[in-house]
Length: 208
Image (tube, rainbow, N blue to C red; front, side, top):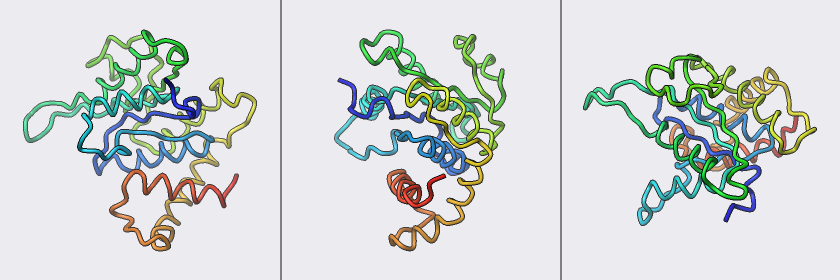
């Protein structure tokens, strides 16, 4: 059964390491500034659950999915790439193709560092309109904003422009340390839930 918030849930499938964090934060901000809710595997912290089951559950609850497949470098420790993002993209596309009811209404945004780079390592998705962000926060925000602005949900409700949204993101990040201090949190050690909660709090008092 789909979540009651299914139509406004956005599954984010991307790297979670330190170097990618600013892009993750930008994606989450854009999702919420468009009036939707970001979901990702980082929000589940239950050692009693199998990770893949957590991911499948999240995919089931989200009508929209953002998939960044830009991280294909070989791991220095073992010389192998990480396939988590392509795997989760496959699960999402499978739910859309073979699911029933509202699962077939899913929409996806696929991101990569360069627009056609994916053809070298995951050519089976040829035909998808993969967007390039070039590791730039402002570009990633624009892609998310334009994608959600064209979605069938909340049709006719205009979202702020990408430039304005990027400016709002930078202002939020500047004010984030003060927000963390108010709630006795360490800005360098925020969990995904911490960040999302602080963002929702900030948006309540900073409508565009």
